Image (cartoon, rainbow, N blue to C red):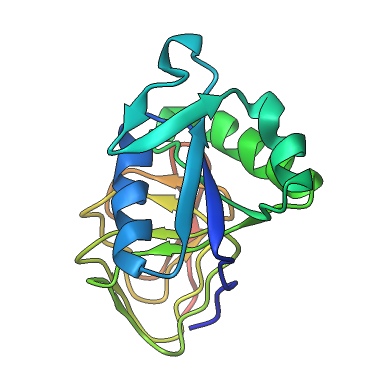
Length: 178
């Protein structure tokens, strides 16, 4: 499985429900210390999510980079917020951060599967042989055999075998020719 390796310290971007899921995944991975979270909501600043402090807004990213933190995770999970997820991802990359893989140790990942930067793979997920990711897929959703999901798509329902889907939400573009 080809994924970027995490450094020893990471910052979480956002402090909502999906960020809590990723906090637990990062902790279960056991390779990275979560230094803090950033969130746009001032009411969350200085509060804690699962014991992790919300340091302030995204405006702290350049200072954190100067302080030696080089990795982040993007804790935005709702499919209707994919623009925000992409914005945070791009902002972090522009500043030089690497978006770490958050892959739960309870996920089953084929050694031949490949991921782009910053995948989130939850407990119990199964990623089969030769799978390549480039989209957001809702939990408990099945991607059929020989199907292709367009990069950046939001898959919110099952994808049949031999199809190509794309968009937000993902929609059928065409059948794959056998």
